[in-house]
Length: 434
Image 1: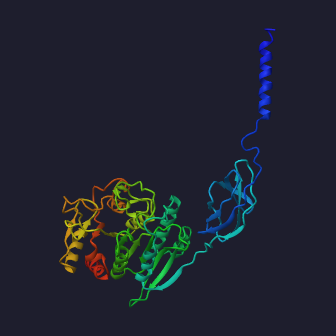
Image 2: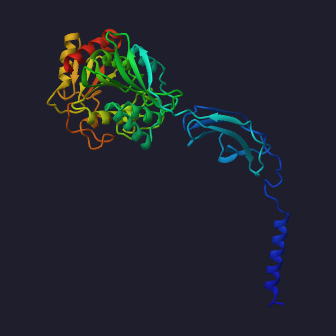
């Protein structure tokens, strides 16, 4: 018996184990109740290549674990959410969508309501409009998203490459190519005729199509600039009050080469920029810049357009308008070329002198002259770093200056408040650059 005892217990253990397994049921094997079908499936923000699907979730006796999205009767993706963005769609094409719910036991609901979605037509055409360029661009500024909402979307490398081709085409007056390439990133070219002046003036406005999905900003190029190397920029149109409208006013009245205005408040997106520097603008304490802060993010259309124009337009000079709340010890205007170095052509000093002609009560600090002054001098500005030859505009301040970037901080009442103040800045720029 001793010889067979281990075998006996082994067989007994196996039999007991098998008996135990056969009588045991998993926690969900008794659940045969399927979830209710999802309801209220709808689509929004449909572009030439994507659409956002949203639906009302299902109920289940145990709980829904996922939803299957069907595109043209084929299961596309499974998601625990009650929304999904479908990408990779063809332009000007109709697609059918419906949803099923699934619970932990694998029970599936019936289908939701089915919807048909037609993507936008990407047949690109040149838009032509007319009016007053200040009013037209002012509407963009007034309706731009504010300091929350994550409306701003950081462009991909592919989108930036496409955008670069758009700018190339505009600068080379190849409007056909500009029109077709801009459509690939949900933008369009608007040939705008300003009829508020005599003779009328014409501009190419690179603007996002509706419904907007990127909010990269609006970029305007004069067809016949008087000052063909002057670029005016407003990266903080919402936070720095009136700087966007001031930039447009100066652009129109100096007949500069171009004006760039951002598409949202600088704090719109909660994501942090990887570029160096911090700010308390978006928080009660010092925090990294946001990706929607276009003066402090190199992965942006604003930066790419600056880079392209800087390299393409000989001797181009970039005037960037900002605003600040004045402390008692502050001057009315803080000027900087982005470094402590003195350039051969010192536009900051020229602008100071021209502004004093307009308003002798103004006071100034200039970063490369008042070298003990450290407040609001724009050394972390990524456009300034680029233009001044930084080895890495995202993380490294420039050590030399090209003289082609001027960062202007303005107290509100003297220069930013209304057209009276804007005229002072416009007249000063025209005096220096004309």
